[in-house]
Amino acid sequence: MASHTFTLFVLLATVCLCPSTSADDSATEAPERSGELRFTLDELELRTQWSGLDDQQAGKIIRGKLNGLARAAHAYYDANGVFPPAVVPNATIPAEKRLSGLVLLLPHLRRLTYAKGGKEGSDKIIDDQQRDMAQTLFDSIDLTKGWDDPANIKASKTIVPAFLAPGSAPFRDQYGYATSHFAFVRGAQGRDDGAFPEAGGTTMGGGKAMIADGLSQTLAFGEIQNELGPWTAAGLSTARHVYHPTDRPTVSTFGGPFDGACYFATCDGAELFLDIARTPARALHALATRDGGDYDELKSVIRFRDATEWMAAHRNAKPPN
Image 1 (cartoon, rainbow, N blue to C red):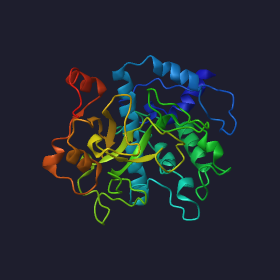
Image 2: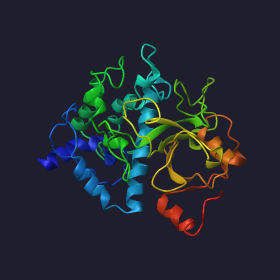
Image 3: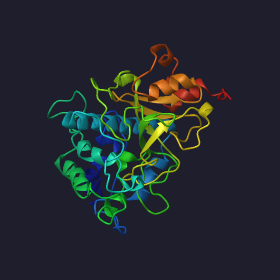
Image 4: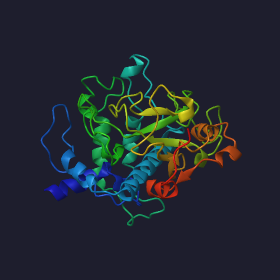
């Protein structure tokens, strides 16, 4: 039975999002938690599997998930003509109660049937049952109500492995809501000038919200580790601005287990391990914005394939003051 459930739940795990990922994310039938949907995973089993990963293995999982999120955003674009907003618009409820844009990605995660470049009958990464599961979760959410409304509590407490990364970050917040370890990049230094502003509406070409710097030169999603909250909720738990250490930010920004560096994906789906501390502030800000990046500045962005490569390059170096 456990192996059957594993097959069913891989939908939202890394292997369902990127063909380069070979993570053994697994799920088994577990007792239903209060307020959870039935299709949940064995959290202890997933943590146990991830606890034995080295930095390179963990990085492969994280890169795959970031690539999958970027591809899901493109699927949303194909269906709507714009990239999704970081916040589901709803003027009838307070801003802190609104749903996260991650909710809007759910039905597009299920569309990742074939690997990029794959043909029908080959490189299949999710099956019909898995696609149905993603749609079921999305269909359970009332988009007209808040993330903590009784109608949405079950979804808010349901873990989505596609939004989790190996590491020290918890799967749930202090109130038992399922968290996300990834967030939309809204822009730089508190401005909504990135690919995923709160109001959304960004395009690949045309209009005032065009990603003029190019998809490969604009950050889309990044890794987060502190001030986590429900993946269904708008706010810092699912969308953030990029800050450089010299900005002396007073709010949480992107980061992971490694001091001064973490994983991101650009809008074209490319994954990178970004050395935030050693990248010049102007270059970092340019990479986080959709328009206004100077290509000479962007050349000074210090990026690596993964944390292992970064550690090898800077094993004995210290971040600048």
